[in-house]
Length: 411
Image (cartoon, rainbow, N blue to C red):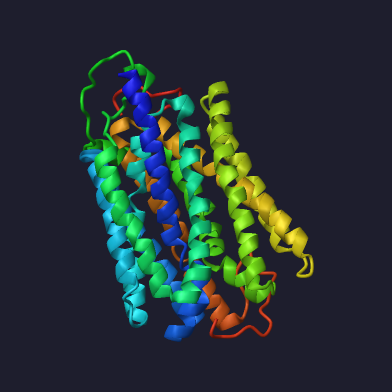
């Protein structure tokens, strides 16, 4: 049994890593193509911001739906289904003929974006608590790497052969991974990796119920994570959506240097995710609240280095890129620990829902940020914080009842 579980750990880790890698490549392929889409469809900054906001809003609405489904039914089948949806919606995006088509089809890609809680829930049943943060960190490391792939495909294939070709290319992995997940990933009983359940050969199957789902909104420990998610993710959406255009149009970096800067920062984020997960597990072994304390420190350090990076003089390109790399290394370290902590303090049969609620708070906090920045640029000529310090000069307008786990009180 242990040998089979160990083999399954590697399979699920590799397959889900690939899913995150290519899925995020699809999500961020639009970033270097913003100016291309704006020119082809004659969009204002506000309209382009709506394209990004629509995707986030759809994901926000569907997070609870996916969470409940994952806690009720087969997680493997639902993961495969989400991957197939990714392929379909990205392919439809390539067929857009006008602004409304673009908004609708790109918004539809948010359907599968909301399915990630099920992936993390399944991972939590393969890895014990003291290793859970590292596992999440390794999977999250695929996110910046996927962003690099998406940026390269968008900046080179998308611009050379057309954005429709790039979108169509990124739809193919969705279908391939759907079949891969269905055939290779094995579901395990909820709670299989918990120390309290390790001595038992068979585990009673639990699924979420209405009472337990409602309790998730009343626990103070979970509410703390939800609230920090609301405020903590807001800058991410602004930076992720507008950063390429900012460093090209505002700071005046040539496209090749801008791509290089983004690649360096994303590599730093990759190491940040792995490091954050490993640090979180280390401090968790010292104290059950180690992950939370580490996350709090990371949030403060992230805010400091965002300020330092984006207030560098425009002629200090090296300083801006170095501070940006430090920021990129620090910022993602909280992510694996927030996810692992949410799993630690939630019953196995409710973890997808708990993570889905966290996703709602995070997405609601960041949903309107690309749109707000677009409107602010359109009507004031400035970029919102953390870009407040950079006015645009001459840029083109075209552009439960059971005991708690691991020392956390379920209150």
